[in-house]
Amino acid sequence: MTRLSRLLFSSFAVLGANAASSVLDLIPGNFNSVVLESGKPALVEFFAPWCGHCKSLAPVYEELAQHFDFAKDKVVIGKVDADEHKDLGRQFGVQGFPTLKWFDGKSDKPEDYNGGRDLESLSSFISEKIGVKPKAKKTAQSAVTMLNDQTFKQQIGGDKDVLVAFTAPWCGRMWPICTPYRSTADLLTDCKSLAPIWEAAASDYAAEPNVVIAKVDAEAENSKSTAEAQGVKSYPTIKYFPKGSTTPEPYEGGRSEKDILDFMNLKAGTHRTVGGGLDAKAGIITSLDAIVGTLTDGGSLASVSQEVSKAAKDLKDKYADYYVKVLAKLSTSQGYAEKELARLEGLIKKGGLAPEKLDDLVSRSNILRTFTGKGGEKQEL
Image (tube, rainbow, N blue to C red):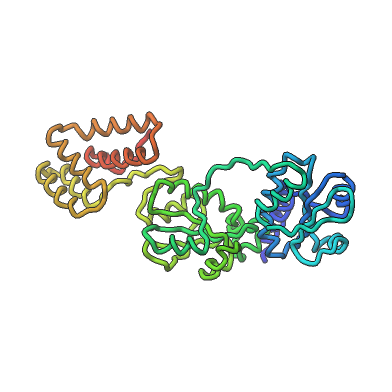
């Protein structure tokens, strides 16, 4: 490992250790006072950093603690690194990881937790013990499509272009486990760092019915088989599945929002920009644009209209008919394209449009610019 890599890893290890968490770290120095003598009940997880099941439980356990964050005066949700503090593990008969135990805050005789390790089961257990219901923080619905073994087979190979990130819940807490050393830039692309970028990209494509930005939890029981079948060895691994194909193409591009959009626009033939808008080429049909362009070279409106109408009949693009419509309007109103473009731009500037309507107005505006000789110009709104 290079000296720079060692320094970067050390920095991230410190950051990871000090990252804000609602789960209380318990060590020999505070265990008795917090768990055995405080009079406040506690749910304690005994874990080991190398334990795969512990890594899977970690995000669930963190969310559990967040849901009971408001009730810190009534319950403690903590964890013990029993690999480092072996004496604490032995004291309470811990023989495997993770082990969860419930302490009443008054004695050293805990109750074993043998329920499910999902959020609902853990929350119900605590609620029954302390008589307080959890409070979940309201979060916006994710635009990312979560795939499991069943839905992966349904989604891949259909009529949609799908970009899939294979991730693990723990990836981002201990970076070297997530991905092999390749470059120092990889340090910024663990699952945790990728998550908000992936969410933003999914939101950008929310209005595209034939594009899916998806994610697979490669260590979840209901999706582990899919990750193994795809040969996923490190996290995050990103693969692109073209419509109609189950054969993936590895994504090896940059991991910024723009990088992902540039890739998918090229593959899927879309025109999304960062933020979810459309670029200056949206709606444009190259073959029809070439015909319309002959108007500026002295072509007659009648001949261009006839040629466009003939070509449009063989096209499945929904905007082919719009070219025909504009040419028909121009035959009776020479300044139609300029006036209509100004009208549409005014509606766009006014705002308050539904996403689908906005996309339509932007696409039609792009087409109209071809007729006004301003095709390809970026619209300033």
